[in-house]
Length: 377
Image 1 (cartoon, rainbow, N blue to C red):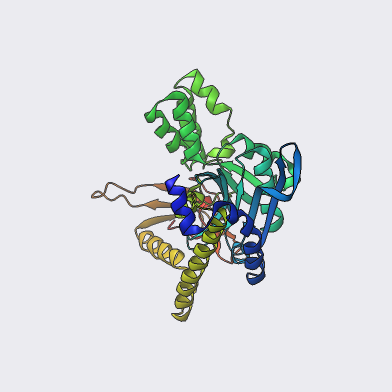
Image 2 (cartoon, rainbow, N blue to C red):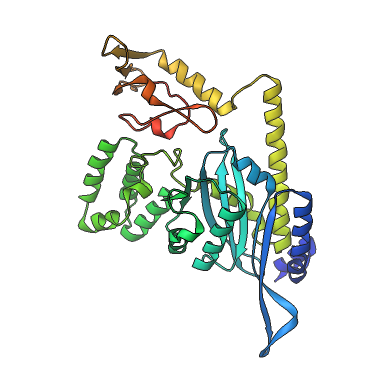
């Protein structure tokens, strides 16, 4: 009680905060083109009668125009997650997050709802599709919450193929496994299995994992490999994202806001996104003035791969140099290297990406699918 009074002194009265929410969001929308919000209310019951003077808060959804615009130039992945609110009035904060080409986290949308129910997730995902992005082929990453799975299964919401492809967070599945079987070592075996990029190695290790016990075999067989394994992400839709870490990064940034009045919470998402965009914008402008064409992360990776490629051995398998094998030199000091990459046609390894770059298509070890820039091989 004392903590809530202190919060009220700092951020305003809890009840008044709900009353101010609509006017603040309207003001934000007027000064931030492209932004959108919706507030839902329930009837307020006094005794056995519906009050004409009061309404009861139910849900709110909001997204900022700058975030929507930025997502047009990001990889087509969205991670969704929910976290509890701990203020005077409880609820759940839902979040959708993506990532830019430089590895920066991009918050897309938020909602405060009554809980992680089917109706709440359906409402959030419908608004995400209608008011944030109409991109096709989006990879939607979440935990295996029954309400999310049921909401995504509703074709009317626009998250079924080819509009969206739903996959699961590996860390959440591993935690579920550990709760059921209480074996930390086997949990780590599962995580290593999920991150295995080579399909034939994965299949062999999966069978070994299934042999641990009939119960484990039944448990793992109930989850489609396409939903949790890197090896069976044949189209590379995950871009290497195996967890919902992006959403949880935003969750950590907003951790201190989860126990304050609702209008203060919404204001915090706005102020922190504003600061984020200003800082990243200045960084990008500085790089452009310096003549940088590609983002820093890509430049660093290309330089690293170029240096490592100098030690590789290439064997050509025909006179037209269309089929070859790449071998990585073994380093006796670090005890690393010595891998071989199977024969393939060089031109078939590259596929154009949406941002005008090149990506390596599927190959023997499966790693090329996960990147959007040429690797050292």
